[in-house]
Length: 116
Image (cartoon, rainbow, N blue to C red):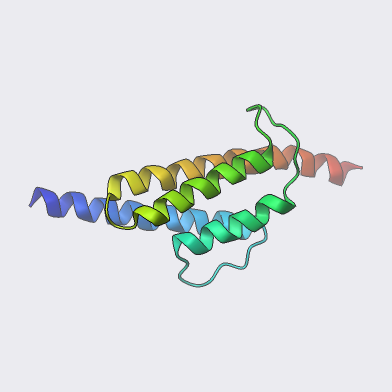
């Protein structure tokens, strides 16, 4: 019973994180398929990395470096597949956190460009 509860919670967490990452890829201009896989999301964010500004933000990391880190975590999650669900979720969450920080860095720059 306990294993089933843990498995269902991990599956739900996995689905939420994939949805968040799909939204993130779309925010960076990616054309996200209807039911994307982790590898597809990594490919979309990797494309966004080449188009992202390369200036440092508050975190000290450049937007490109943060997105590249998110891509690495997505690739690690894809390699793990269903073998270690908790570790896969950790990589997915880390990718979300890095993408979020990268996106936050671009928001002030976008405002400044619009004000010009």
